[in-house]
Every structure is written in C-alpha cells, then in structure tokens.
Image (cartoon, rainbow, N blue to C red; front, side, top):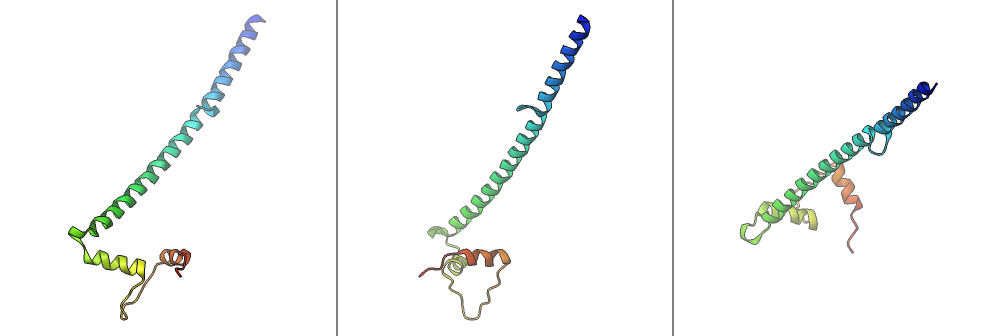
Length: 106
C-alpha cells in the first residue's frame, strides 16, 4: 500500500512536470512563440534598415556637392506635383491610395 502511494505521488509529480514542460510559462510552446516573435522582429528590423538605406541614398543624391538631377526632378514631381504638359502619370494602386490619403494643401 505504501509503495503504491509512492508510485502515485511520483506519477503525479511527473505529470505536473511534463505539463509545465510543454504548456508552462517557460515550456516548449512558450519557447516556440517567443522564437516566432523574435523572427518577426528581425524581419521588421531588416525592412526598416532597408528603408533607412533607401532614404539615405536619396539624401546623399540630393546633397549640394553631388546633386543628381534625375533624383531632384523625381522629388519635385512627387512632392510639388509639377509635371510637363506632355508627361503622363501612371500610378500603381498603392500610390493612388497613398495619394487619396494625403491631406489637401490650401
């Protein structure tokens, strides 16, 4: 009887430990969720780094000592809306949506 009780206690402890090892705050499933969140953060960081690099290249192209006229013309067209009479504007759906969401200047 005493030995049987001992086995039941050990089986119960083993079950609790197995449950905590899988579903607990520091269990296997929680670890998987943290790893997924980390990977998502790494991807977001890489996107931001790429965006920063693209912006940095635009800034360096607009510096006075190395002015790129094509980039300057592109920025004037984009920000000021100045186009030649013979130019046609082709926008993607994303660009059209962005244009609709911009506030109208007085």
